[in-house]
Image (cartoon, rainbow, N blue to C red; front, side):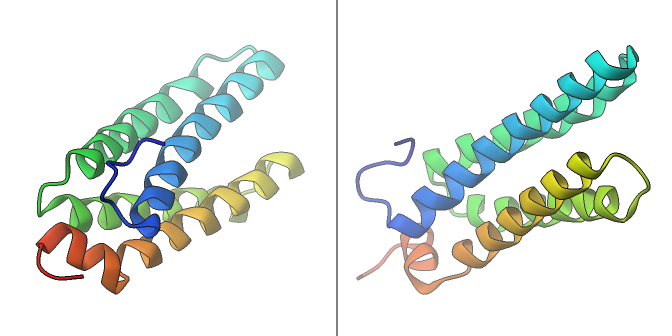
Length: 125
């Protein structure tokens, strides 16, 4: 697992969702690139995934501001995927984007739980 040993399971699951969500977005872009032959399908997913992985590494490092930064970035990524759901396109992209969006919203909820707040702020558990 990516999280430090003293991190609560909520933080570990949010880290996992962030890492897998970013990589799944790249995979979606790669498949669409192969289907259409347009390299524009991979540029935006790579940028989003790099941003998301930076936030994940921040959560692993554990500075105080990492929780709020991750919640903000995960919320933005969820909105990006919701736009893909509402867009006209292939059904598999819309379904997968909906699942990734729901997972990111769940990660935001996990980062706002009491154990996650205590973990990043410090103090008694």
